[in-house]
Structure formats: C-alpha cells, structure tokens
Amino acid sequence: MKQKTVLFGLCAVALLWLLAACGGSGESAAPTARPAKPVTLTATDIAYDVNAIEVAAGQSLRLTLQNDGVLEHDFSIMKMPLNGEVRGDEMEVDMEGHDMSNMSEEPDVHVAAMAGGSNTISFTPAEPGTYQYQCTVAGHKEAGMVGTLTVTVP
Ligand SMILES: [Cu+2]
Image 1: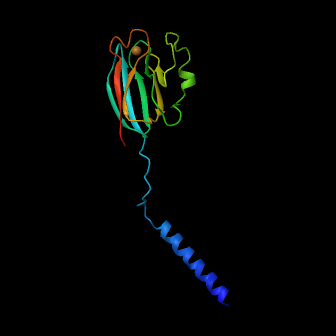
Image 2: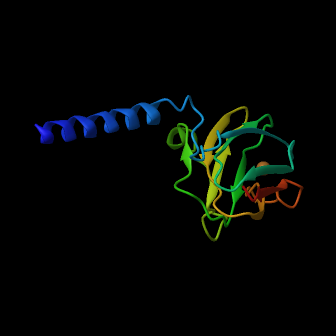
Image 3: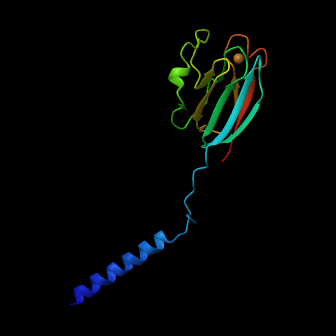
C-alpha cells in the first residue's frame, strides 16, 4: 500500500514538471537562432549597388545576386570561416558555363549570375571580422566591384 502511494506521488511530480515545462508560453530561456538576414546585391556594368554588408557571427545571410548588366558578374569571398555549407538555390543549373579558370583557388563563398539573371545563396559566417567580397570576372574588382562584409560579435 505504501509503495503505491509513493508511485502515485512520483507520477504527480512528473506531471507537474511536464506542465511547467510546457507552460512557458514561448518565454524560453534558451537562445533562439536569429532569422536569416536577406540581402539583395545588384550588379551592373561595372559596379555593385551595395558596398557594405553587416551580419552577426552565427547569423545566416541569404544573399541574392541580381545581375542587371549585360556582362556576367559574381560575388565571391576568398577566405571566410563558415558554420556549415554554402547553400544555393538551383546553382548547379544557373552556374553552368561560369568561367572560373582565371582563379588560382576557389573562393569559400561564391555565387554568379548571368546577364539579366539572379542567384541566391545562404551562408553563415562563423567569426567576427571584416571580409572583402568581390567580382572575380577579370578586371571587375579593379573597376570597383568590391565591398566589405562586416561580421559583428553576436
Ligand atoms: Cu563583375
């Protein structure tokens, strides 16, 4: 008889604990991941419309490269520590024919858009700092297609 009472008591405690855990009404103490930051970078011949982008370390950046020029353009960051992979939307299809033979090494972050097209990638910078982005098409960086991605302390 005594054992049953103890068992009942344990069940009651477990039930109360569950109710308390569920009744937090969204005020969770656990840090929630920041939503992805959308940025659209428009490229023309030969310039970017945005030359400074800011994102917090650990926050995903969803970058759309819109090409309003008649030349091909891209967005590349040579070296950047990342959380996870760079994810793209339909990149395999749209990047066919993109010539990167003028580059000695592959950039860590890269997205290209043909004339009149656009492409979107998502990536998550892992460490605060300033990183240069550029168009890797020959001569374009020199013509001014460069910018700074500032990764802030979260
Ligand atoms: Cu370019």
